Every structure is written in C-alpha cells, then in structure tokens.
Image (cartoon, rainbow, N blue to C red):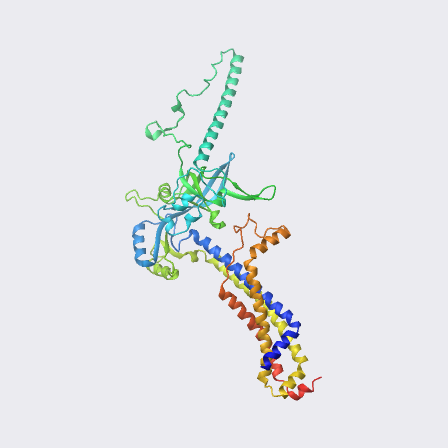
Length: 525
C-alpha cells in the first residue's frame, strides 16, 4: 500500500511533473485530432473516388474495344456467382469539348463516357450526383423543362425554357444583323446607281429569296431534296452530361464573395471531337446538347468526365457490327454485394480471363486508384510517427524528472529499505509514478482531443473571424466543413502508446532506485 501512497504523494507535490503531463496531454490530443481529420478526409475521398467507379472493372486494351459482350457477361456471372449485384458495359474515349462563349470557343480536354441509361446506376452512385432531381430518380439524356439547381446548387435559368429564350434572342439578333446588312447594301446600291444614272431597285427586295425553302441546304445524296429543318427551339441534339467543373468556374467577385460563373448550362449546345474506331482513327465532330451536370465534389472527375448515351457513341465511332447489330465496348463494370471480397472475386476473374488471352484486364477500383490511396496512407503514417515524437519528448521529460526525484529522495529510499522495503517494492513506486503520469496525461488528452474534434468546425469559424483567412477556400476545396471520423481503436492505440512511453521512461530511474544500498543511501549527502 505504501508504494501507491508514495507514488501519489510524489505526483501531487512535484509540480515539475505537470510539464510532463501537459506534454503527454498535447501529444495524445494532437494525435486524436489529426487521425480523426485524416480518417474523415480518407472516407470522403473513398466515397468520391468510388462514386463513379464500379467495384471491379474489366478494361479493354485498346480504344477500339471488344465485341461479344453478352458472351463475356454470361461467363462473368458464372464466375462471380451470387456476389454479383449489377453489371453494365460502357465506352471510354478521350475527346476535346468546345464551348461557344461570346463569339469565341473555349476548349476543354475531357473523357467521354458512353453509358447505358438502364444499367449504369446499378454499378455506381452516378445518379446521386446529378443536379436535376428527375435524373437522380431515373437517368435520361433528355433536356428537362426547368427546375435545375436548388439552395445547395443555385443555377441560372436552364432547360427548355432557357433554350427557347436563347434561340429566340439569337434569331432576333441575326434578323437585326441581316436587316442592317441589307440596308447597307441597298444604300450602297443606290449610291452606285445614282453615280451611273441607273434607276435603283425597289427597297425591300435586295437579294432576299422569295421562297423560304431556298435558304434550306440541300442534300446531294438525296437528289437535291431539302434537309429536314432542325428547330433548336423545339429539338435537342444528343444529350450530354458534363462534370460541373467543365462548365462552371468558381471565382471571387469584387466584394470577395465566391460566385459560380457558368460557361455553359443545360440547354446550351457544345461541340465534341473524338477519335473513331479502327486504324487509323479519324477525328469525328458532332454537336451535343447539355442536359445536366455531374458534381461528385472530386475535382479529378468533375473537371474531366462527360457522359453520353452508349448506343449513340457506338454509332458515331463506328463500333457497331452492321451484320449482327452488336456494339463494341471498352469496359465491363461490376458492382458486388456488400461484404463480398473484392480481391478474391478479382483473382477468380483474372484466372478465367488472363490478359494474354482476353481483350481486357481485370482491376478493382482500389487497384485503379492505387497510387493516390497509397500516398494518403503514407502521409497518415508519417504524421503519426512525427506526432508520436511529441509524446517521446514528454517521455524524456519524465525520465529527467524521475532521475531528479531519485537523487533528492536517496535518503528516503535508504530509510524504506532499512525498514524492510524490497528492491522490487522501491522500483514499483517509480513505475507506478510513470503509469500515473501516462494515465493522467492520456486521459486529459483524450477528453481534450475528442472535444476539439466535436467542435472543430466551430473552432475553424472562430479562427476565420479572428484572422480573416478562410480555413477552406471554396474556390480550391470542395469541402464546406472539415470531415472527421473517430475510430475507437485509434483512441485506444494512442492511449496505450502514451502510457507505454511514460512507463519506459521511468524504468531506468526505477532500476537505479532499486539498486541503492541502504547504508550508502542513508550516508548520502
């Protein structure tokens, strides 16, 4: 019993021990905060990375893709078995997207993804990140009347209402321009006629065809018959869904407020150029109508992906076999049921479809994002190692404190041994002292760290008000709040590590105190 009483007395009366306790507290609290924030970022990143990627992807070796998709799908279902939750096929192809803006063209490098509206949502969370609510329920590539955007995603007028107004404005502008040009031509003609003494033609007839169909271009292959008139106010081109960062730029206005500036919106038309299938490939350019935006809040996706109907992309690229009507694809994507082992299923598929014999390779979504995930994991590990050095510094403080106590209490130790205290009992006094320092410091650190994590966004707002600097710049980061995840095992591990360091720091002083000879200790000056 005397061992615990003496350990408590030394802990209570030695204020120098407070510095060690504070060091342990800061180290434990910092580790909990950093690990919780990193876990939150990692979780959000995984969600966003996985939002568009299926669990397992069978990707073609070339942009021409592969055929016999139904046969491969049948074999895949046999290999995967009951773990399969969804299957779809798609076409991925690099492309250049051109956006008309105020008389000039803005070019973006994108990846065009041809998707099957009926099955693509079975293998990914794609629909959840679309802006229009109807597309979130059922994916279509048809332009909606309106109702684009909400309080979270405010957007300027979009959809068919905007398209009709835009076409009407453009036609009126062209009509006025044509009238101005016609007036200038008439004035020039009258001036020339007056100079040559020739009567001027009646006004209003100068060069405008009396037959409206004369302005419609003819198709030579159809024997000169007029091409059907395409009314942009009533018709749309093939629908395309753009990543929101392709058509929207976040910038601060003159007052410092972050604003969304839309280069294009649902209802506008864009030009897309992509390579055809076959060797050598040819450049194909077609017009598409923007029907929605995709916002996963993952910059890599939102700034580079555009989605179009699978069948239409296959037709434009020449990927459909005219004899069978089957289209080639570049990927087959699988979604597995919850709890299924991704690596095990991947290995079974690789055993069935080897890269040498099959026209595709098999990867999980983690394999495809391996470098990024590995970099995040390495960063977390390095941060933990560096922050544990804070607790190591506290350990050296405990070591120095205990050596001072052993020196100061040498006579007391001699008295204890003279009264019959064993070397193990004396050693346990200082080990108990170290455990006490570690437990007290860790307990306070856990409470402080968890409270900091709980109120971290309020603290961030307070720091922003005090410094005038935003913790998360909305023009750079997609997170409006700091994400956090607290893993109980992480807290237990941090506490165990802190207590272990405190105990190890007290071992050497405890051994020195235990080895003191009673007579030499009593004669110590």
